[in-house]
Image (cartoon, rainbow, N blue to C red; front, side):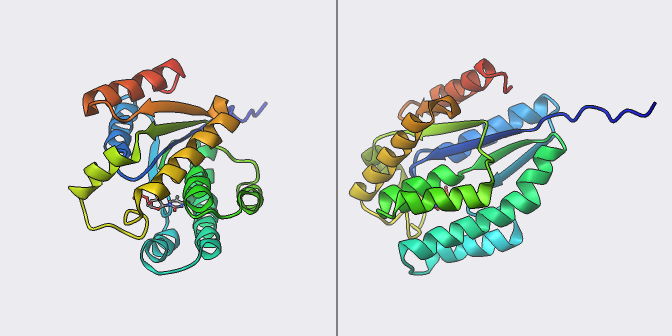
Length: 211
Ligand code: TMP
């Protein structure tokens, strides 16, 4: 009798935090660890991750627009990304590591811009059809520390150019999201040294059977 082999479930891990939290370095460490363990890894980011979504990212980061337009564009990018990259990868059993996802919309458009979170929840339900990350690593640190790190880095985009009050609202919205869905989040103290942060990230993943 022909039997289809059981489908290996994929994993969906997202990484979040205010600009300057240093998450991108640690995304690389997670990718390296997974690859060393022989995982089928898909590393991606939002807004972005597909040719269309990368074009939308460029607009969102550089063109003036209001918060509703921003929200619609990041969810349009997300729809394309989920449909063409994330869902197919999870279906074949890949481990997907995504630098930002919907928590960033609640934090930046909801918290930072003050846009209606009820509308964001509706867009979330509509676009994601119940899909949520298995784990979200939230890199948390005070905006003043993050701003100092950013100052030494690159030319700021529309978000990076915002003031400390904006980032305090973004940070609080992330923490609020974590309070609402505690099972899904792990808080990483991003004020520690890069080595300590890396250790905390790898320990968190190990504890959850994700390494
Ligand atoms: P990145 O620099 O970490 O790649 O993120 C790009 C910027 O886009 C960052 O400032 C946060 C912002 N952003 C939103 O405003 N809403 C979103 O839904 C996402 C995913 C990112």
